Image (cartoon, rainbow, N blue to C red; front, side, top):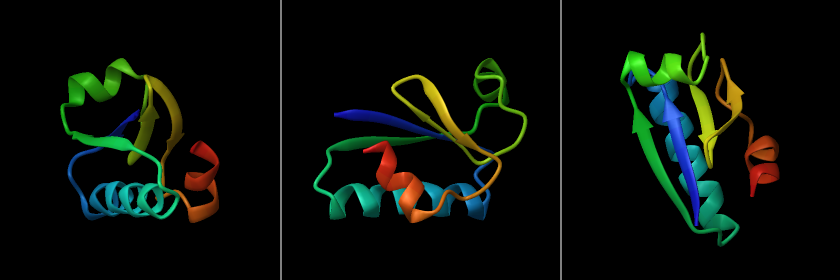
Length: 76
């Protein structure tokens, strides 16, 4: 199971990013655990300066915008 964290303040873009990841993982029959992380301290620990950001298995794979479907699929 992939561990996915969506880092951000809880804004609409962050929520949309988490929803997209869940939907695309389900479409591709990939088991994921998606968490939303809003703590500024945790976000900064990843070195992320713009959100939403996506962390998969403790590796930052995207930040600064809502990722597109093809990019999300490439993660799985």
